[in-house]
Image 1 (cartoon, helix red, strand yellow):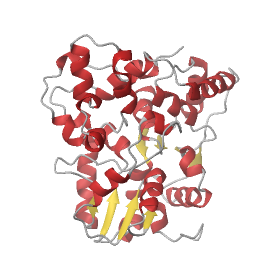
Image 2: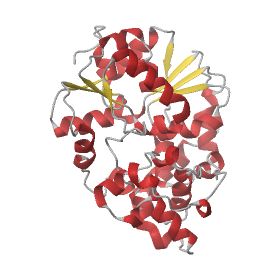
Image 3: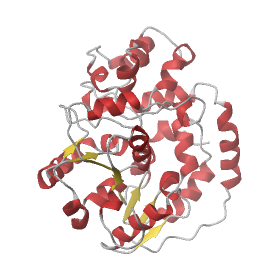
Image 4: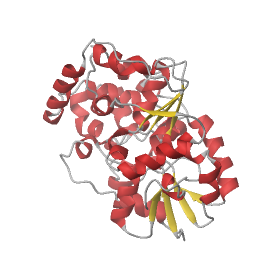
Length: 334
């Protein structure tokens, strides 16, 4: 069995390096919602320093949204996402994961999967697949810069297993990765999956859907000065040093505002705990959305993530559109 979280996110420094500076609290959505110190990265690190086991801090471990906003601000460069995923692996798997893990075993067939011939592959994830018209428009826009294949296996079960800290069978992982070897560019909708694919496919350029679409001239020209552009937090923080410069350039070109705080950390919109992602607890993004919108005067919200689109639509303050819906290419209607 593959310990994907541990193998791909091996931390150069662990929780013992935490100095207690509290910078992670400034960006943590769980702290903003609860003001419970024990539910923060700092709280978990200090508990571990004092000898706590994963089971002792299970509520904290499961509450983490894995938005990774804490990582760029940590002066000790602790890989806090890896720490949380490792702790989740030490906890009993939620009953809701049983069917998923059983299904992954079924899908772990050793039969060869055909290689993808296109130089670019899109892995859309469930949220985009559930909106066929938007998915069609995303692909049509990406085709403008070259042929883009749609991955039949986008690793949605692997992404959810990663979220829960579940073990992934090596054969299942091999079946997922085999068609992607040799692909020059892989565009991934799920930011957590993107983070794990980067070291597994070092020969490929792996970027998020938001970066891929916002790099197109047609999309950039459709952005307005009074738009609020909502960056998908997980992909952004997984490659923060590069993407902070990329989005600075986009902000200068488009003139719109972004969901960035004063440290240029992306404030996550749909910040979900593990129980919420598994459907075990009700979702409430109100605190995060109010934080993002506070003091802003915007006429439209433009999102990279379909999950963020659903969150803002439920809040209902102003029109919400996906990046792909900015350009009318005839594939669908907004």
